Amino acid sequence: MSGGIGPSADLWAELEGKAGGPANLWPVTKTATKPAQLKSLSEYIQERFDEFSRSQKDVARYIVDHLDEAAFLTAEELARRASTSSSTVVRFSQALGFEGYPELQQAAIEEYRTAGAAAASAASSGALFSFDHSELEGSLGADYANLEETARKLTREQVDGAVAALAESQRVVIVGVDQMAFFASYLRHTLSLLDIRAEIVASTGGESLQRLGRIDDETLVIILSSGRAHPLLLRAMKLAVHRGARTLAVSDASMSEVGEHAELTLYYSSNSPSFARSNTALMALVQALAHGLYARDEDTHKDRIRAYKLK
Image 1: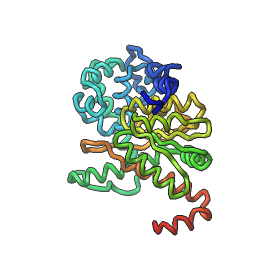
Image 2 (image 1 turned 90 degrees about the vertical axis):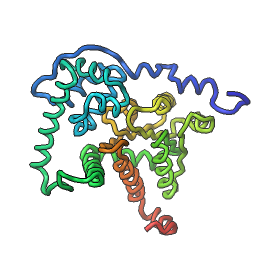
Image 3 (image 1 turned 60 degrees about the vertical axis):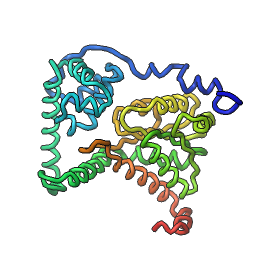
Image 4 (image 1 turned 135 degrees about the vertical axis):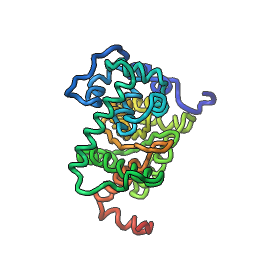
């Protein structure tokens, strides 16, 4: 970049991960044995996760976090939703020890049925909608399930840790690209209502990179991720770790690429019968973080919130 505007060469080196490099995030090995009978498909995938290639990890993440969808998708449909190719899905199946994708799919169906039966026996009420529902009911039902799944997988310690980090940090930088840029902006808005100033990095433009360039050990870097992590998210995470900043990864993958390196992680479920992932649970999570901050010092915040006439 010219004219002294934008990140220095040293910052570019940090963002590109010269000291370690992005390639170190994706170890590649081959072969596996067929899953043990007593283990579920998800458990076996998580055990062997580090052995897969980057594209195979995309398939693994999608199956583990979207089992109710993956169990009934064709190899081509699963490949599309995992942002990879059908040949990668087949090779992933074989790497797990299956003859091909149909055998892996059958294992997914069996796990889904077992989990569904357990959930049904534990539930105190019936399904939100009947089985024969419309597209609207199917979408709403999926969002309802996403909220339940997100609440079930998050722990009190994870949420309290994220709220404390937000409250104690001198500076907050939120990184989110594409559709995540909207949620980065909304999170910044909710924080501003509580008198916490945050900056957004939503592109590789000069101004955004300058914000990354100011990251230090008093900064909290929040990475918002959906599906395969954008290269900028991975570079921002590596930069934050390199500079000693606190890090929080919010992702719809329980085995997230950015989450592997974050100090704090929060998971949200994004299952959807539609053409796009659901972000309902992510919005609820952003709201919950804001509420946690408000409740932490309600007496200080309530007059400010009353002035905004938000409730």
